[in-house]
Length: 211
Image 1 (tube, rainbow, N blue to C red):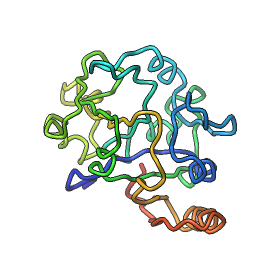
Image 2 (spheres, rainbow, N blue to C red; image 1 turned 90 degrees about the vertical axis):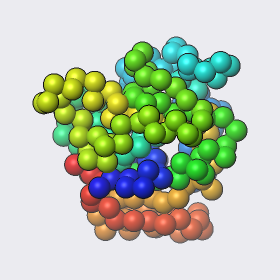
Image 3 (cartoon, helix red, strand yellow; image 1 turned 45 degrees about the vertical axis):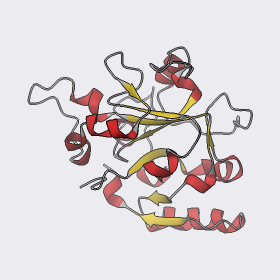
Image 4 (cartoon, rainbow, N blue to C red; image 1 turned 30 degrees about the horizontal axis):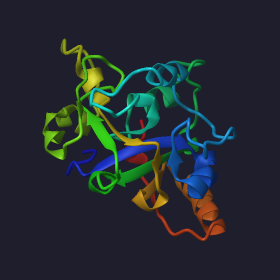
């Protein structure tokens, strides 16, 4: 079961972005420290939409101002990347290229501005919250069972499965709980980069985090 105790959130990135992450933390695309060398693996259409879509909380700005995480590493985005389902819009990539950044929800909630959603953030049907007591409104059953199917007639499940936790502008390195990869080859690459920067972070081989 994924995220059994409902304590984590996850963000995927290309493994080649790790050096940038270690230098600047995780930043949104508009941040002064955002690099042109960053390898983007997401859907560019969604990224553009979020830049113009307001958060449903007063004075919280636009969704695109935030760094998004999911409550599962096995996101629909990862499914599209690994299977090539949306290729060439979303490039197909090998599992070994993907780095899963894991953070504790309670750690991220100590940052100055954040919110979470009960579905895909840019979907008009999704609600936005800034109180952790509302985490119960997330569809944990679907998320924990990696189920975003519509086969039983639940056509809203894919939206709910993509619930997000979003942090304003930047997530500092100290808030990263661990780095997770598909195999030993990827773990060795990550460990070598960490050693170059003399940074100590847990590196876990988690094939169950991948489709």
